[in-house]
Image 1 (spheres, rainbow, N blue to C red):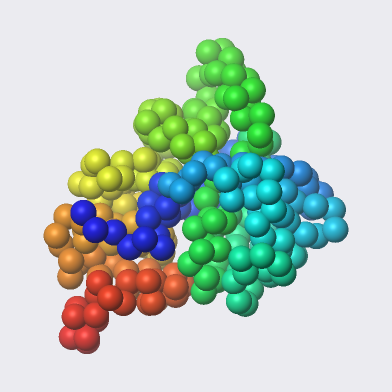
Image 2: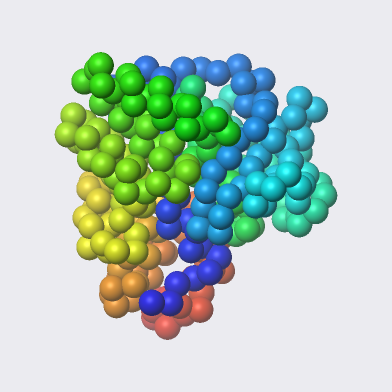
Length: 265
């Protein structure tokens, strides 16, 4: 199956990692700005990648997590919003703006506005600390002693950040048993289904949209699944909806695949 290279790595992104649950996430506490400082890692479709947030408001990006610096970027924090302005290396033009969400186990970035596909697929999604194995063990121990499903959600998102999608899906299944109104967790689970269970992706996205009608990531992910299943016109309709809701970079990324359908309008 042919997929758009720019966004292939976005398929396994958690899509809206911020919490919209009815319940208050015990780990979702307000963090001081300096809590972002330090090293964060994840494993995406193209392999491992690392961020090192510095006290001087610069972040060093290491593609491959091999102790090299490939991009140096200025970052600006304002509440739960972060802006990235590339300065050195493989740079993107303009500013990338993301919503930031942080717990004691991971940090997540969700797209607000960015026209650079490379920076989107590098930045968007879950990140965890380099000692993620210790964090998983900590959660393993807590889960054996508690029925609190939030612990499964935390562990599942670390699994997502580190590429262990099958384990992540099991944790999301457990969480959804106790909270059926968290649109973002349905998208988390949908991301773990690609590319083996496209019908499951659509089902989870449908559920997310029924809860949060204006979730741009749900339309984007459902569009990918529909397109891969041969429902190309419906897929392009979903891409168009995602663009209208703010995923503007799709206008260029999906133009070739959707030109015939978008031209009808």
